[in-house]
Image (cartoon, rainbow, N blue to C red):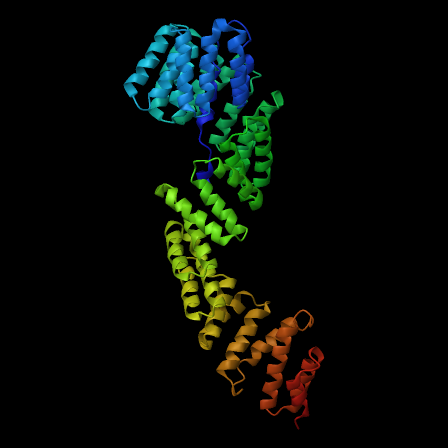
Length: 527
């Protein structure tokens, strides 16, 4: 379900906070670590504390507060912090880099001017500023921007070749370009600088994910966790791999660990609830979706998944309401076959067969495997004794997907109950051929042929009832009903043939299963 994937906002932007810092102490290391671990509220509190504790470097701390807001996608708040940093120190290069990120989306010229101003103020030792700008370019996921990031980073690395985060970002740039070989070389260079930094294992794990070598990716992420079990994003990456391989229980286990380690945020909660839906824990998922809706979570996919959960818990009226909310708010290109599938299911439950029919057609147009839905509509018609439409629905399915045993059974029943016994027998023939040890096909062939031969002139139903008896006689308790029907037919057949001896044998078999059976009692009395 690619549609459930979280926005990659933090994936590339974390690193831009963590470039080599010109201050000579470890007084920002704690804040940097908190940012890297996605504990953004804690990072914000730490940097605010540092504003008072170390006023000499207040402009830098103010910048980092802006970066936390930027990572939280609170861009107006980030812009305020960047400008406050400038007011504290008009030559603080980082502030111009931060402001450039904010304005470039709406004003390309102004954004670039801010980037150039930042680089100019930073001078040759500009790795820190370069990392901020390159991190922005990489985050966009655009290959041209990745080229721009590489050009900046290569210049910075000439001056500071052992800058850990510049090497990481260079590797990230090549990942965007799809060049795993170059990406690996830069990640290895970063590992040589800081061999025990979990970020390296995160990025190397991503390389293996891109190569679809998921087992090695998980092993690599776990190496990072062995260095720091509190490194929450690695649990998320492991969870995502298990999600891709449909190991939803393991995905949830790792996502729960991720949520325990990071600031609880809406995107993470949404992803977690999505996993719960996939593992059929609909009630828990609904609780989270309800909370997110109250908090005005903006992703329309929330309505989709909430509708699905409501359907699975039997709340059809409310579920249909949310399914319609999804269609009203989602970008049309994000509407999938599964959306029409559930809409059709809702309408079947609401007994609106015309809208169900219409939405099944939409679903099948987008995904031919959804033709199985015609069986659901066929079963609805069968239940409502609308056999003509049931047959039409089953035929629509079989025109796209080859019929299976259940299809033959349902189609045959529809013909049988619409009194088209010859067609019913033909369909049930497919079932008896494919399941020669199952009694149900032979039972319906017996019924169909009995009604085609009501006076027992040909006895054409007898071979099929004989077969039911052969298949069921070993367990008269379990198969009482089909045996009673079969014994009565065979007894009646022998009576028509004036074979009293054999008729009585079968009437007695009937009475053994049903001692009060009036038909058998009367049959035995006949001379």
